[in-house]
Image 1 (cartoon, helix red, strand yellow):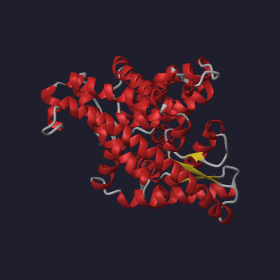
Image 2: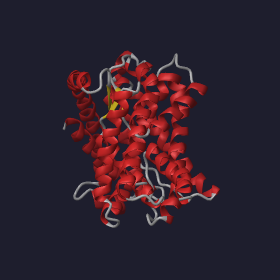
Image 3: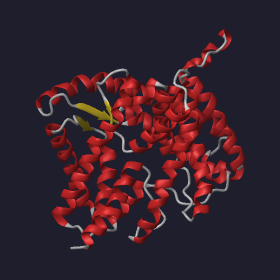
Amino acid sequence: MVLSAGSGIIVSSLTYFGQIFSKAFGLQGIVPSIEAINGQAMNDLNLGSEIALTFLFIFIFNILIARFTRWKYIFLTGQAILWMATMTTVFGVNAGLKGFPLILIGGLVGGIFAVAMPAIAQPIVRKITGSDDIALGHFCTIGYIFTAGVSKLVGDKSKSTEDFKFPKGLEFLSDSYVGVGLVMIPLYIITAAFAGEEFASQFSDNLNYLVFAFIQGFQFVVGVYVLLSGVRLLLAEIVPAFRGIALKIVPDSKPALDCPVLFPYAPNAVTLGFIGTTIGSVIAMFALPLCGLPMILPGMLTNFFAGGSAGVFANAVGGRRGTIISTIAHGIFITLLPALLVPILNSIGFVNTTATDVDTVMAALLYHWIFNPILQLF
């Protein structure tokens, strides 16, 4: 609940920031939203039961694969499994599947992703955490691996993002939360100023719109503080508790947890990752239409959580320089894949929307490019 409370504060602050950001720079385009796809699938297409059962089967297959293979990872990020269940169900129906085969194949595909993604990420997660007690359970892992690959090519891991040295009189700046505030609070204020008083004032009630932007920037820092406190609490409690479950059902298994579990290990990298990913997503937003693809607006929530995690991955293998360069590449990458999905979603009735988590996007593309042609033969 502490973790959820921190996420809620950040989501509220970034939702406001996303709106003033779009207005400030005159951005119009498609806002990625897996939540919108899930809502339309359940309400308009009446796929609620199928999605729920696929969710259950993903977890069952996850446990079975972990039990009988050397991939000993139990994926514990519930909302990520729900989004995977949504995409496998929607694209399974489009491929001609229905009933139990739809649920079974969706569960199997999702179950494979649920153990394969933590397994792929684990070598770098071990470098980040210095142990093998936990794994990463977040369906943006392909993006993290891509970022780490770029960072390794261009970076220098001898100079970490966490090695900033401040003069004695400025040592208070070495506090992670002060550092986040020094970046984010001016960013909020400047963006609100560009958005203009008339637009930004609709969010601020009786407060001056710039004062409100300052408070929202501060709220973001508070959210990060609460979130990381929740992460520390979660790690302290869940790892010992999980061992008992692991010994009974899946010996030697590891809990695969949501991406914020990595944030305390490199807080500066999280901030750099967010900024770099946002820059990359803005570059891609303007570049992709030149290639005939739709304009995808930057999703600030994805840029923070996925971008921050990508920054931690990048720092582990490429240090400060690798983090700065590779997270910009990450922003381009996680904008390109959703853009490729838009025409496919449009063709099956999900107009002007797309998904965000790149692993779920890859699962959808897998269905469309591979399963569709095979099933058409029957």
